[in-house]
Image (tube, rainbow, N blue to C red; front, top):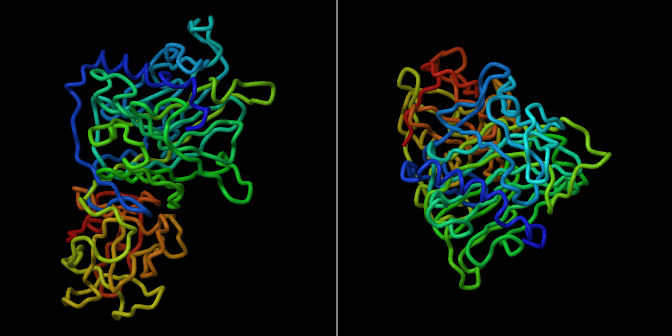
Length: 429
């Protein structure tokens, strides 16, 4: 994509390539995931979820992530040294991962250009989790400042055998400090790598900056189709037709990467305006499964249909069978009516009476009630059903819940922090 990647080509990837060889890629586990169509994630099954809960200062979950170390072999001419441990990647105690870039060199680290000037962190799921297709999503607050280069991306798990760019690369979100209101999504593969990557940018309206708040970045990935979205707004879709006859290498397992680079030929380098430390803050990373749908625009009823049962064997019910926007969704005795017939839609929505299970006022806080509303593609209308029988609102990272664990008819349902209690366990179609 543009010349911004021109010299970045083997950059980030080569560090991963060396890592792959060291790990032995035969150990990678292929998971089948689902790509959602236009507005959101596939509603089928949660394949991977990390909400980064834990004590402040603790390290990331080593069963899910591994930290890369070194200066990225000078690729992209970056200036950071990626450290192990929790000095530059740690939980903040508030449900976030924080990757911190510092202007320091506490251990006389040596980089391609001499003594390193900065430390940071880069982590991946190689050897621990891979997926073929699915909705891959994270809620992230990026850093700010000249020379900052945060990224949320994926590499083909066969990179140790075929190298880059034959492995393929899916850049879900990249931002460079001199473009505070724009992020980029890009594909790299054989014949379309580096400056020739295929992609597009997305700019926030109204002159807003991405570093001012959290935003949700996602790809919906299905056979021969990948769509990128920011806060539920799809801004590009790519298919093999976009490659001009070149090879599409995105029908195989990929692993996930999060990193914060400092400097490089695309972002440029920190200057007198850059303030350190800078932080890449990640609320959650979630992968939901591809259900084999047609990757359409989210209209119609293309999924499994039936009642959703929960506490005391009662059903999720649209109060009074009323189709008006704002009708409460409640717990009620199962009665087989259409007010209790829910479709698990391939775009991540749960639908009854032609409308979507939604959060009141699109709020995501603990205790927010749920109701029926027109399907709009809003991120707060997307749900994922876990193997543990939780129904998780992706935007809120909270579970569908029966308030006070009270099974009384008419008790309006809500979202609450996932706790595993019976009031949050459901059997869906």
